[in-house]
Amino acid sequence: MRIVADGALTEVEALSLGILGGTGDQGKGLARRFALAGQRVLIGSRNAERARQAAESIGHGVTAGENAEVAAKADVVIVAVPWDGHKATLEALREPLTGKIVIDCVNPLGFDKQGAYALPVEEGSAAQQAAAVLTGSRVVAAFHHVSAVTLLDPEVAEVDLDVLVLGDDREATDTVQALASRIPGVRGIYGGRLRNAHQVEALTANIISINRRHKAHAGIRITDV
Amino acid sequence: MRIVADGALTEVEALSLGILGGTGDQGKGLARRFALAGQRVLIGSRNAERARQAAESIGHGVTAGENAEVAAKADVVIVAVPWDGHKATLEALREPLTGKIVIDCVNPLGFDKQGAYALPVEEGSAAQQAAAVLTGSRVVAAFHHVSAVTLLDPEVAEVDLDVLVLGDDREATDTVQALASRIPGVRGIYGGRLRNAHQVEALTANIISINRRHKAHAGIRITDV
Image (cartoon, rainbow over all chains, first blue to last red; front, side, top):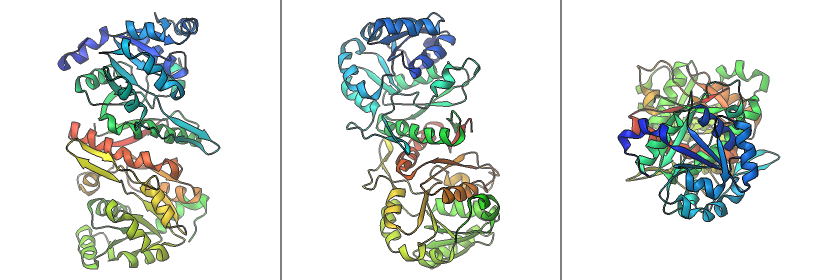
């Protein structure tokens, strides 16, 4: 499935979205917002029953399945698994993800008494690890800074942040920018090539520091754009 | 010189600001904005004559001197030298910088045909390198994302961005937040500990990507704060 660049904004509504690791808060939050925006959403999990429960808790027509099934069925796939199982999960899904846009939103972070910090990643970043494993897919990095709490909060009608979209495939980043912009309040903004994904993932540690200081659910906006 | 945390916001106006490498665009831009805000500003350079010329081009009472002289005279010192000479410059200024708040705003970046990318830094980041060299100073990281073009633009009355302020010394980060907020439009926001400075510095590569795509001078704002 390929989407021509000029058509990205209009055709994106027809794309089904699979969310691997969709039973976590981040995955559920994204599933909820995209379903509310009218997108067809499939939640994936290693455990089909847990996926089904998550889909049911969200409602809005969200369906469920095992990760491999969702990876095969969905047009575009969001990877929202814990960093811990990131590489192994993707290695097992190389075949069904071939040719697809794969959106990695995983933040490799450690936590100690002083808060969050960025973990070193051999490939440079989670997104570059995904690209190294999924050589037949079109890997894009996005949705790193969206607060799961905000996404899941029924009181929040508009999500007040920009989503940085990174990748080396212009058509794919255009599509993901358009997808991100489907969530009310959100703008999808091109944020550079995959080699610059590390700092976007790692910045989540700083956002966590801000949240702790201000008891907030901070996001970022890009000015002058 | 120490500023009590509670007094940071009121006493910060009295602080003189030295800017090392103040003849570059970033240094000149910060000098201009702080002088306009009523702060006493000293521009430093390896070459006193070049510093004098830069100060004269800015006006607003900005004075000049060699780096060592400015480091000795100023209450708070901003390091705006090129990454290339960062370590050597600071090693030569250990003594005059002792006991002072030193604000590092240096972004270690490389450039090639595909744009900007983050350079690896042995200490983790420019700010951590500064802290490793200046063991007697109070090192804070800030002002990484401010566009020199915007700072120097006489048409821009308010600078539309937040300045992330990082450091391990609460009193020092409070003071630098208050200083940043002296520039109309700017908010100084605590952004975490020095160990999380790398990604803030490196994010400048992404902002450069955004600027190229949009022909903009992008900055970031923190939402929900």
